[in-house]
Image 1: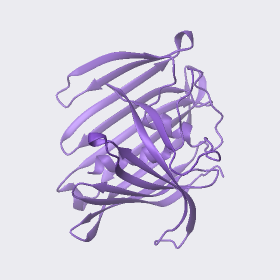
Image 2: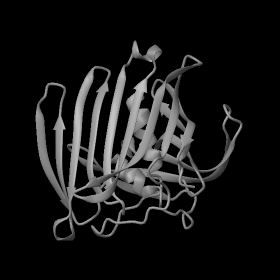
Image 3: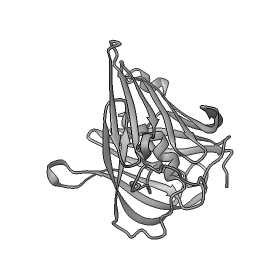
Length: 265
């Protein structure tokens, strides 16, 4: 349950991204700067009772990659002590992108309910194409490696969210569908999002009202559309998710922005 919550938090950041036509994978960053930190409280509904499920924190700092200025992004998720008894989760994700938002490296170390694994992706761009070196290590220490090539730009969850935050939605129409490529240590797959329009959302804990863009992540089991999550993205230059509603087989989970600092705008 918790690993799905954080997975879709990341997808929510990436709500407005569509595939580029070629591997010129650069873009102007208009949404964030080094020093940003976002904090979330995670909740789960169990038999009509909402319980504190854990927290998530994303931070962005400056670094260098092959001698060039870059951004390093960490996303750390942990379950609450109350939930640890049923499902312990300690996840750390790391992404490095250049200042023009070109992906260079991704890593996820996950301990989810006793299941430990490590995903890694390295990016290079020979001949103007995207080349991935993917590495996956399971809980037994068994490592599998592969490569993947494409004429299009490829992204992991973290680099995708950073790129997406600078994308514009002015020309989108209600009901429009977006497909996005996402890589991890052993595969590349597309995800589908549906634009639901604009809506105001008032945060109960602070009383602050956010003007939001609303999106849904959907799947197509047996060819029929199934809504998995609805999320609310701030309709401003920061483009940060402030609320997520996740529909699970055994309940509903929610994530709320609890604190932010170092925002660019």
